[in-house]
Length: 254
Image (cartoon, rainbow, N blue to C red; front, top):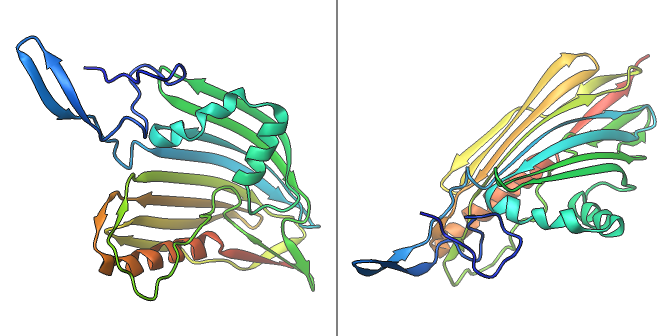
């Protein structure tokens, strides 16, 4: 059985986006009709997988590249950019990499695979002064490509229940190359959170004195929640944002 979007000329054949999923529909059969529900994608199906690397030089400048593969609702959020002009792409990625000051796009390659319903981005960037340099120390966030942008608003008195309409799953694996003139003075510890709202995990593996691998897994679960759950959800998202901003400190060799 295929569920078709009857108004879009762009969506892949049989793709259920956020306009047509989880809807009540009338299914007509030879023996009669019945009321059915259009499919709902799971958090794992709404995935974004990122793999890349970046280097930091002695002045704190970043140069790097990342390949991002998006599926499900995350595919739908992005595939339209394949028709954008260079100016529009610059605006899109400056907003996407909102946390990187002085961002400059070096190259962007996009591939919209409608058969696999997968959108692939290959992006090369540079960013002068990404790391702060002070008193012989460099400090910067390890999650350079995909940090959480927003924390839900705090309410003194929450009056209503809330819904996470659609879940998602992100996995990032990034190689980080450090300048040879520096050594690691401090880095974040591995972290893991799990509750009914989702799952979050970070790992840091030192491969050589000047190379480490950063891995991040982040899943948000859909569902309806009581108003009493809201503060716990807000704290979950706050913890994720805090760890996404965790920094490494390098000190210059003496």
